[in-house]
Length: 154
Image (cartoon, rainbow, N blue to C red; front, side, top):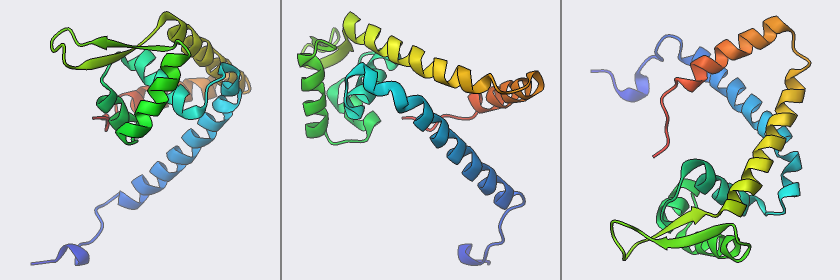
């Protein structure tokens, strides 16, 4: 029997790892570029991220939001409290279980995030303006593949 430590790499593993590294680096660079104008929203990054989850992902509990954002519940409580004070989030009793509280973005929170998303899309759109038609077609084909990768979200 061959131990796991002595197992030969599977074919294509190094190529996949290199491709994953390039994809990761490109995504980080694009996200940093798109985030430059996020300060215009007037929210610290943690609040903007949590509000984004509620706006684009829908209502959830504080525990669910903390898990998605990968922070502890006390940290998320402070973030949500600040968003609630700003009028971007409201707490509601869960319709199925009145003991549970769900967090929902307010119309003001939705508008704020939509404007932020529009700014990011404009930044990325401007960057794509330097590509040829053929390069944009190649990128569109790559995005079709990326959009069909299995999700790792909970």
